[in-house]
Each structure stands twice: as structure tokens, then as C-alpha cells.
Image (cartoon, rainbow, N blue to C red; front, side):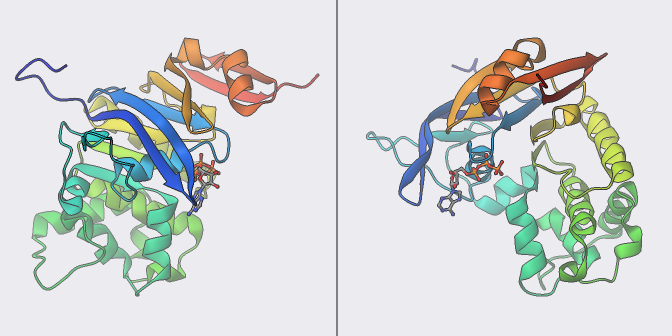
Length: 272
Ligand SMILES: Nc1ncnc2c1ncn2[C@@H]1O[C@H](COP(=O)(O)OP(=O)(O)OP(=O)(O)O)[C@@H](O)[C@H]1O
């Protein structure tokens, strides 16, 4: 229960069930994330991570409860115009990347600057100010993607398109970033630069929700970890409680060895 006047949680999910192909892939799933609580989401293939991201982004919908109460609230609200919600969130996901690279042609700069309007590309009613252009150029430079301006998104490599979409997600300075394996396809230098920019954003107050397969991408600013298994929360809590050999071993059904280097963690399959 929120105190009146306090900021509502970024996310409240109350026993949400999501069906895909007729099967529950999130099963009476509950989660609460306060704004400012940077969270990493880990789990085996098929555990429901991307489904969770799509549920939050309103790209998938849960079953309604019997009393018609919606099981998902974002920034305290149950009902959203999707474009309005996407104006508050920066989203990078494989679904988005597919949408931006496989349909109608879309030029790189337009893809980034249209992030201000939560739109896929610019329409006649979108007025782009000089300030918006500057921010779009700065975001592209931050991701070392300025040289891609003028190209069609569909013609980019996976990592190039990923960098453009990350720039797009950052351009409007969202309150929260929803990142589904954002580093997949990035080369080592781009990954490092991106993780450093995530650190700065986290310190600057943008809440991060990061889905990753790589424990070493959990930047020090992320203090909370959610382990998913078979569409349910297996464990959640601080890193010392969740990034353990036992918890990760259970999440992935394989013995794991976790090592810690300062505020960074690394996990690998334990060799006998
Ligand atoms: N379009 C779909 N139709 C039917 N089932 C689907 C569909 N998309 C996903 N699923 C199923 O939903 C479950 C959860 O998938 P999801 O993509 O959320 O997992 P994930 O944890 O993100 O996996 P990965 O690590 O492989 O990306 C899987 O069992 C998957 O097969």
C-alpha cells in the first residue's frame, strides 16, 4: 500500500498469468519494483523473461482477474495509452529490433529521433526541434553509431541495429529503461561503453530493468536480482542472496560457480 503523495512503484504485478500457445508462460506471477531499484532478471531459456518485458511494455496482456482488476500497474496506473507509456520507458528488446529492421524502410536518424514520440519513424505531425536533433546526435555518438546515419535499419548488422535502438531508448531520457538482452550482438568495446553509460544513467536516477544471460553484465549499481524459473519467481533479493552457486544452479539446472570481483560478479558452469 502506498503512502499518499509518495511515488507509486514503477511496477506492481499481482498474480498475473500470461498464456502463449495456450500454455501459461507466466503463472500467477507477482512482482513489485520501486522506482530507483535497479533490477536484473535472470533465468534459463524459456523461463519467461521476454514475456515479462512484453507484459510490462503492454505488448502482451495477462488474463483478467475474476473481479476484472488488472494484474499489472506501471507507475501506479493500470490503464495506459501504449504510446504514452512508451514515452516514459526506454525499451530495447529483440521484438523491437525485429520490428525496426524487418518491415517498412526506416532511416537510422529517424529511428532515433522518433523515440521522442514513441513512434516507429517520423510522421507529418511530428515536429522535431533543434534540441531533439542535438540529443539524437548525442545519443548516437554515445553508442558510437553516428556513422550509421543515412542507412536503412534493415541493412544494418545485428550489433549496429542494437546500438541504434539503444540510442533511441535513451534519447528522450526515460524514467526507466526496460532492457531485454541489450548487449546481445554488441562487440566487446561497444558492450563496455554501453555498460558504462548504463552506470551513469542508473546513478542519474533512471531505473534499470535488465534482462540478461550474463552475470558479468550486472553493473554494480544494480542491487536487486530476480531469478525466474518456469514462469515463476524462483528467488529475488540482493546480489549476495541471489548470485550464489546454489541459486543459479537451481535456476539453470546445472552446477554453477559464482565469483565476485569487487562489485562485479561472474558465473560459469562448475567443472567437476
Ligand atoms: N509466440 C509464442 N507462442 C507460443 N509460445 C511462446 C511464444 N513466445 C514464447 N513462447 C513460449 O513462452 C515461454 C517463455 O518464453 P520467453 O521468450 O518469455 O522466455 P525467455 O526467458 O525470454 O527465453 P530466452 O532466454 O530463450 O530468450 C517459452 O516456453 C516459449 O516457448
